[in-house]
Length: 256
Image (cartoon, rainbow, N blue to C red):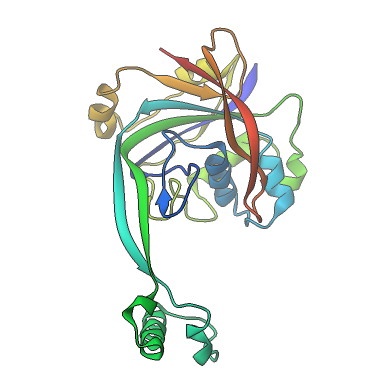
């Protein structure tokens, strides 16, 4: 038997970073391990540059159940930001407002005598609308967590932080807030699938339509147990959050 920390993620929008090239920022179909570990760190109030605590959280074994995939949507927009040269004319400000940046962009255009110097950047970002995911985390028996480093004792202690987080929690991007409470709970179980089955979540009315549309339930997990149907590889195992480095990990698929 293991202890599993279970909670549910739902929001009007969510986005789970995939390999990005150029101005295209795609989203994976379900939460990455790095995103969920980042969410835990935010709940515990751990800064991104606190490497020892981030590393301990990354030892957790990760499983996700897709309860409702949601609908993919794309957002196209342009972004303008002043160049380093453009803001050199005023270094007296301790911090810049958006209005200050706009004035710096205007200054850049005037200096160059060309609208092309305004510095507009195109961006295409992908999201999933009205998706629902259940998350399960457990301790790796071969790589135990140093709970003292995290200044807590067990997975159970994380429950209180997920209910009252140290930093604001979001679903992949800051523009994607939670739609419902996480409802965190710790469940002892033989494996991740049994843990998911035993989890009890509220708010059935709000999610009823979305959950009914699901034609199958899909699981992706680090646990290699009987009846797993496929082995995959994902590059979302955090190595260093300060430098945004990730490595590959094995992941297993199961559907019912």
